[in-house]
Structure formats: C-alpha cells, structure tokens
Image (cartoon, rainbow, N blue to C red; front, side, top):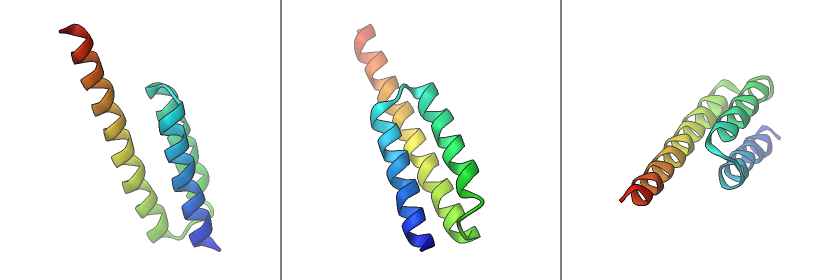
Length: 72
C-alpha cells in the first residue's frame, strides 16, 4: 500500500511541475512532503525527498534557460 502512496506522491510532484509557476511548484512540493512524512516509511520518504529536489532543480534550470534566451 505504501508503494502506491509513494507513486501517487511522485505523480503529484510531476503534475505540479508541469502546471505551476516556480514559486507555486515549490509550495506544492513542500505540502506534499509534509503530508507524505506521515504515511511513508523513512526509506520511501527519503526517496521522495530526493526525487522532489531533483524536480525542483530541473524546474529552476528550465526557467533560467528560458530567461537567458529571452534576454539575448
């Protein structure tokens, strides 16, 4: 059951990444992580934290590239 919850959390992070501005995306991720800490095992929670932080880095990198392209 907790594997399904982990997968659902990952999907929520992915959906938020696609549909939110950077600040909103980060806020949504923090909320997901906060709630997930109560239902996932410690190992799964750490896995979700790593996954989420990687997605946050991707989001920032993409936006920075867009900003640089617009400034050229």
